[in-house]
Length: 365
Image (cartoon, rainbow, N blue to C red; front, side, top):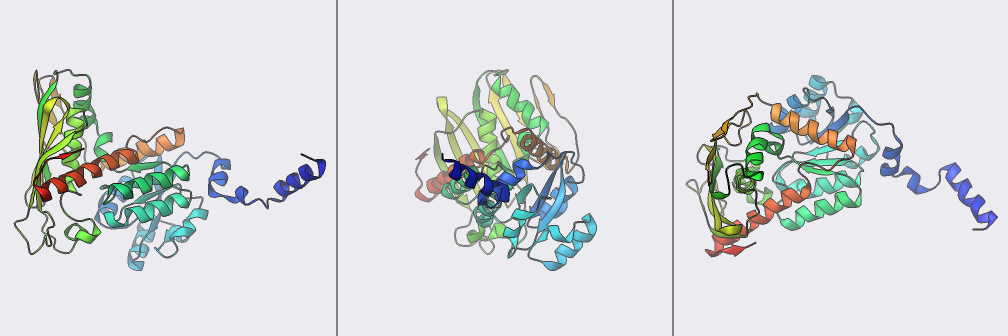
């Protein structure tokens, strides 16, 4: 490099006219490390209002720093209740301005599934780490687009699977991973509740509704985590509804499926918006693990031949633990416990179950 060109480069850097100096990624790397990360919740429905916001009052590694809502009245209520600065309150029109807000490190997407792809990508492009509620998205392609956007922007992506962080879930997984009861022989898992709403996104196909996307993901996770394997095929599946006036146009109120795992191990799963059901039974060579309830907010507990599986706690401890774990991983530069790839695996199975139910045939994975 000539003396003149070198001088020009140094002058450019000194004046700060190089656009790269102002990218959110470079700026964030130059900031001093924080003791706690600021979280912005996007979408202030039930889950944010009743669980995530209260949980953020209990967290050690992160705190509620901002909100994104399309309802001005909600913005005022949250502003007063949680002492949120006006500059940290956004709507969907000025969302992109969040990129320049140093108070916000993580954007947590708590919207209907049909909106996840759009806002995860927007959050990543704004230079923020991203947490996204389950189900991750409606299609495998949408999931991959979200993963790619976060990778491109060098931002982490975590899916809100609270049970991966939950101690009783971790205990039965330890038993299975170490084969303390021998090989798995069969698994049965069910997750559901009676949902009497008629106009929620869960009852709207275009928004990602249907029980398989919502509660069904818990049953799929149960099959995958409980066997400690990935399925090789959907043997059979069936969708149904007892309330066609609510679950219209083929939307599933109840879904049952049989998944095949390596070695011919079968997992029977059921999920429903028509009945309260919440359990998992793992039959092993040396006995049975019985988790009931398997996925409740208030607590997960169970038993095995090795003893009781029960670390008691109360709501919203699971959500606080999940967010604390993910925030700490970001601060320490470690991988997310539940990365986007984990969410994608479940949506691939969701798509295969729907295909099996539609064609009445087995579907290989």
